[in-house]
Length: 88
Image 1: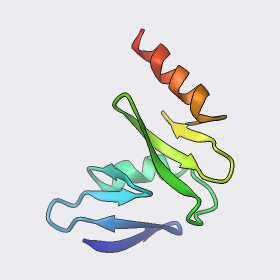
Image 2 (image 1 turned 135 degrees about the vertical axis):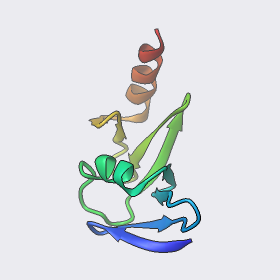
Image 3 (image 1 turned 30 degrees about the vertical axis):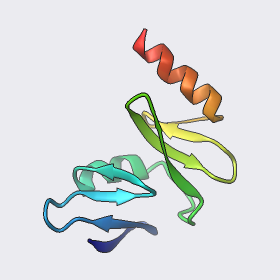
């Protein structure tokens, strides 16, 4: 694993398969990660990975907002309800 930086976001690159990880969320390629990180501002270790029912995203530690499906949702409760509605 090597440390990589994309627009001030620190991540890890797996040199064996070129997969990357940012804020605890894994992506198959850096291109896939870039699509998600473009909407994640202020790259100061204020984000963690967020997982729920086979969905993944980022959680802003300071505000509690959840980034999933290329949009910010106001909180974890709302995000879980959003994911549950997608399954219906």
